Length: 386
Image 1 (cartoon, rainbow, N blue to C red):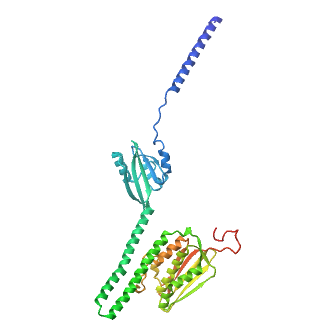
Image 2 (image 1 turned 90 degrees about the horizontal axis):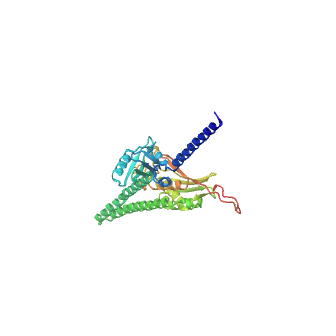
């Protein structure tokens, strides 16, 4: 091939290569300029952020009832597994909301294996044209508190009926026996007993309500145990003298506890009062206090009627009394020990009982000890306050 032909061929190849390069550049530029299709977001903008800060359990479902988004509590409560909403009642509610767009609410009780039942309050609402939002909150504690309040109100009403009814009957008896001074005196004495019982019940209901509305953690005062025991013994001195019961006190000097002085005094006073109430005439009640490194143990020992073993687990329940028919003469409201238990719990302590039927009982209230600072010491923290 002569040189002229070779030059022409090389020129042709260069033109072809250049044309191909230009064509490729145009194709690439066209592809870059072509608008890529935008995917529609799974959730509307901002929804994911809002759901992440909600305290409620949140579940978002698409038009096929597939879970697109669920918070951790929704899985913990057993509402969701994988991408499926498990609760049939909620699925039915979702279908109704999807059909008419109306917001709906319901309350469900969920039971999982052997776990305690949970009460869930659910609210279902449309979230745009395709999605449905389920918000669920755990109402278990609120419902339990409401049940306790209802039971408490019902128990108070029931307990009030007895002395009120007795006073009414005795008043009618006094009216009918107006011409019999001896009968009037006897009925009047019974009226005094029932009115005292009614007054005691009202006082203890008010006391328990007051204790429940206060937080001793806010006070953190230093409570002198000797003063508390002296006050408790003085409160029951008249009743003890009427039954010839000797009140004895034995305490280590200088013991202090941390908390609310009024509440601690109320707890110890109830223990001493119970001991006097359930002790036989001519016996004794011993009140002791001893300290350990971390606690102060206040014990009230009586030689009374004792408590049957099968009753020990229930005596701290509100309004519970050991065999009230058998021990009717002792009276009582059934609230004293529940007050003691409440004070012990709110002060970070405990209350325990040892008892033998027919021999007596020992109630021990344990409270966190507060060690006083040595005189002149200002730099070190109090021992036991760390």
